[in-house]
Image 1 (tube, rainbow, N blue to C red):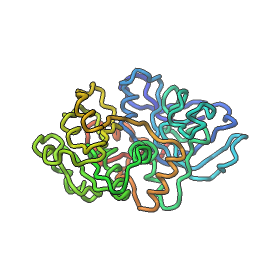
Image 2 (image 1 turned 90 degrees about the vertical axis):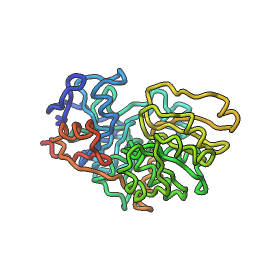
Image 3 (image 1 turned 30 degrees about the horizontal axis):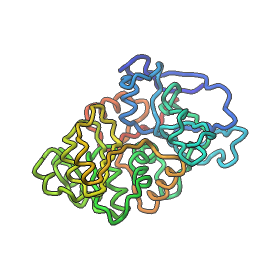
Image 4 (image 1 turned 135 degrees about the horizontal axis):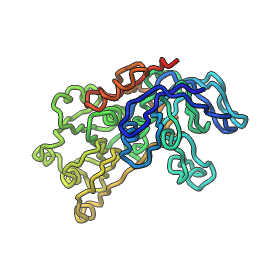
Length: 336
């Protein structure tokens, strides 16, 4: 039996929950969860914000641990190997997207906590392709957030061909943005951090930001008009998007990784005149995730984390809901 924590209704508290996972699939691996991050997407699923939650719901899609068992078709992984499991738990492996290496864009891809049980548990399963080995040089106890928040902000750096000579911006110094700043700094870029909190100014510079700009000061934004090649939006709130588009240099990109729910109030002419673009992206493929982990090991990049016991997950969730997390929360597994 799998021992887990589950909510039985929208916005419900997590309670002990046991279930039978059934036979291990031929292409699956079972991972003994040592730790699991908490992502804002876990809150969205707990609260059914996206209208696709099924209860009882076991959250957790930033799990790291060791492989306990492998399916009969799995040849590239072995029992005892340290791996991570993120938002995706499977993809079809035969569609055009999967066959071209874009497994994260598979139209029938499976998410770890959508219609199945996630990593707030002693074990979690996934298709073997989505169990990505954690290399030496990456602290597995803190690696969980890399498998959702980390790859979410690393993927567009690769996909959009960001250059080390680029001047780039990151809006929001939070669970996503604090990792984006680190990645872009080590990528070689000049990094501008946009934040509404002056208290984060010094922290942003320690993370690798070269300039810190108020995200709500129109005069401050006007001073850097036309200067940035790329701006990553790592928040989920509506902002003055025309002002940020004006900060872009010709051919600049305003790219969304934060799930802003409100429609974007933008006009076409500034985009046309400067050949600018607006885009978005999900998490990356297993190959890009492996690349990210190697990059983290080489440059000693890690999420900044706070730790709770998994048995205290409700306290950790309350901490995150209150906006007090600095900057990612990791649950250490003590479920028995």
